[in-house]
Image (cartoon, rainbow, N blue to C red; front, side, top):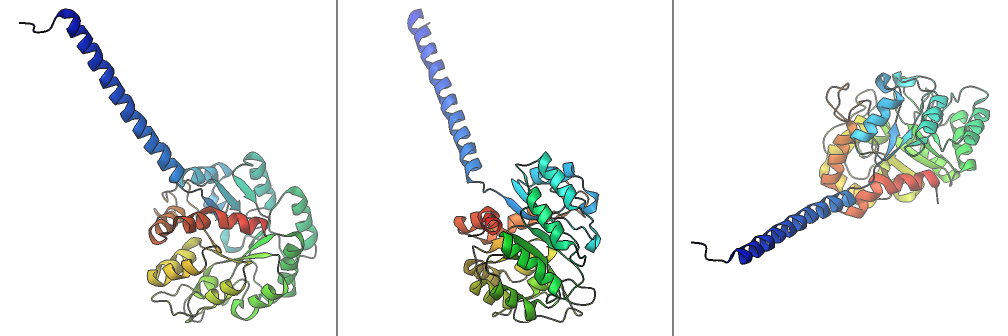
Length: 320
């Protein structure tokens, strides 16, 4: 027996439907709000160290890598001499920049051993390049030609990314002896340190380059990097590649304090050659995703994470 009049039942069903729809809409709204909030919470990412032609990667592959790793922008660093197995012309970087001006920040590099080096750098400056890197020739750091490009960066208010690697056939050898001279002499240039010898100096105990370029184990406090980063605000640390990740992950207790001491001078970078953000062509490893996970885990302060992932690179790019 129907206990409700037909009209009352219709009104009840109508009200129930409206209530259910409202609940569904509210639930969807909450989910969408959570998604929007999560998107807003995800930090912007600027990779300070990427190459095109790395493992034969194309411009399109490089953009695909950026998309897959959540990278908004990247410093694209040429290597015109082909040192280290990567040959990338500054003209190619400028071409990529004109294709993707909202994603690519073009750097330039030319063989500093050639007599027209500064002339070429001035041309790249006029064409829209924003810095020099990766500076990587088989020269001692105190070579007058190395100083000439640092002085040029100081003149035009540019950053320069330098690959420091001591030992036989190394690059810019003599960081411990000569880098501070440039930091004292040139105040506008932002020097971005990168590679094996740079990161070996996170520790006060640095093995000879002939013994190891990738030291492991606990970090001894009092390393050169701690002092130089503390004393020179125009010095920055590029966290990229196996050298950066290896140094930062070898002693996490030390690294947490190191980051707290220098939160405004550490730059997220990958130097990753993979195409898909999962290491498809690089032994299943992506330096970008690996470092992102590490930074998110070890850096508890959200402001420091934002600085490392994005803001510090902008400051290094533009200067004071």
